[in-house]
Length: 388
Ligand SMILES: *Cc1c(COP(=O)(O)O)cnc(C)c1O
Image (tube, rainbow, N blue to C red; front, side):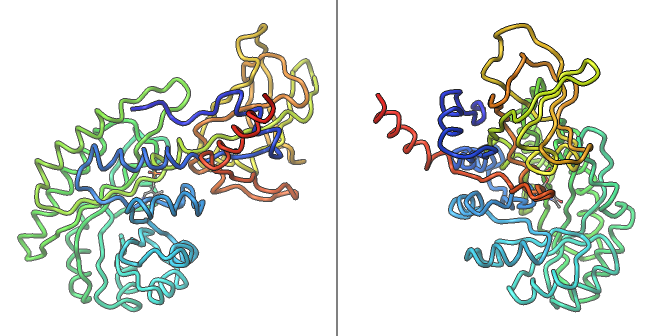
């Protein structure tokens, strides 16, 4: 695995000179590396990028050009991809509980692949798209992920057969199963367990004449954060081995979100105020919880952060707050840092997933602009050449 995309300090300073902060820098070559990781380590597996993790059009376009398919969850996502010219065959509508607007969008744009986990959803899908291809989402209990999605979605594996039968009897194409072990999942075991549960259901279905042909292993693949060093290659190799053993003739899909988008963006933010209150050092930044750092709230994410002055001078503990007038808007508590001043820059790597995607414009602060590193890099180099 190569080191994820991280700007040099020289680049951080030049970008901050050229563009207003806060600014997000997107690396399209990191997007390509992450997409190809799946082709390399899970050969033959079809990738449906979960666009909720980062719907930036330039990132989507890069993936589309590389041949990726997409996991969508709403009418807005279906229309966004359709407008970019991505055909409906490359979409799976993987939200187990779909809105009428979402189903109408699927009908209009020609999306025919869906997931479901209940009887009521079968009737809804059959009403809008007769004969649609459907995957049954099963629940996988797992405590090795950061965000457990199985509390909200997935049917008890014991109910699976009845729901597959029901889909078939309503005229749908009961094509397979799907699961999601939870996001930022750090152990292969959850996948391996899910594969063995899935195999049992495939066999039971076959005995009833329902020939399942697709298994969607969901997302959840982790990215490096802080001190956490995960051997993703070893993890994925274990999954691949088990797939070859249990599902040699099944079409395998995966829906990575975080793994594709997480390492592709760096944030540059700036100290805009300092204050000592009750003996505590406070730093105010031009980006906060309502912006790129929204992942603190929605994704339980702990962001890394670097300053240019790292390693110079003794460290203190400080509180970092965002620019809004809300007292909730605190980004880091008791973070170790060298003393900072107004205008100092801060670099936050690995903030491409569930960050800008859930940012708001609360209190009138615009969302951070996104620039593409491979495009601005050359301009910066030209500038540097002109100066020297
Ligand atoms: C969010 C989501 C994903 C992506 O999960 P990551 O942990 O970001 O890989 C994939 N599939 C479904 C159904 C999801 O809801």
